[in-house]
Image 1 (cartoon, rainbow, N blue to C red):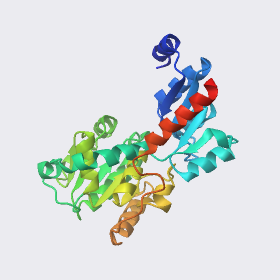
Image 2 (image 1 turned 30 degrees about the vertical axis):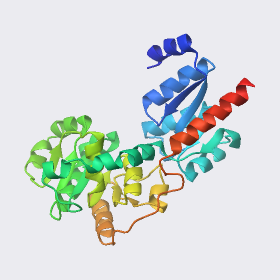
Image 3 (image 1 turned 90 degrees about the horizontal axis):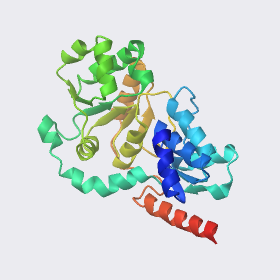
Length: 294
């Protein structure tokens, strides 16, 4: 990424490079821009799991350290950045651009036929996604999760859009036959965004190790069990529908029973998760650019 991105920056000399999230390309693009003395704006800044075994955590911390503007999704991000010594004028609480996408796409997603295609009834199925190395690379970690899913299958079908990494590891660990034997644990190919949004919105419960899905289910009002021991998105727990379930069979099933034992009530979306985060980011970039050019 760095080798290919640097010539682009040298040729075009942008005023800003805007990087998003916490993947390897995020830190790679930020490094290139910073070394070329091009200003960097980080969207989804300040999130912290405080778990340095997660590759994403390293990317978050380093990207924030070299960014000039930090666009934050939730108040915990502001607090984390201040604790790390970032000046207030660099921090902007703007909301969540991923929720912008969800808000804009919700009506189109409602037209999806995915439930009919999969023979599912609204609220009477679970959705699971797994992709983190800590969960799917080691059979000692993967097997307890699978055991919990098999128990949940007795209550409702479980739809599992499977990540290529996860599918490969199922084969490697010799777990594919075990899943194939369970007709209520349904592996499907990865879905397009609109189909997946519809699948999430109408599900009874979601089990995931994805950060983004924690946020989406919070706005959708769908119970979410995060199959991790930490989260960098604490507002999804304090103000949303998310709960940390851990990765043991017992912990997952306990969280599942608690989630299903509560009535499903609407929750208010976190502050500024209103579909206009990108508008705030653009306004801030325009203001900052004018300030630096004057």
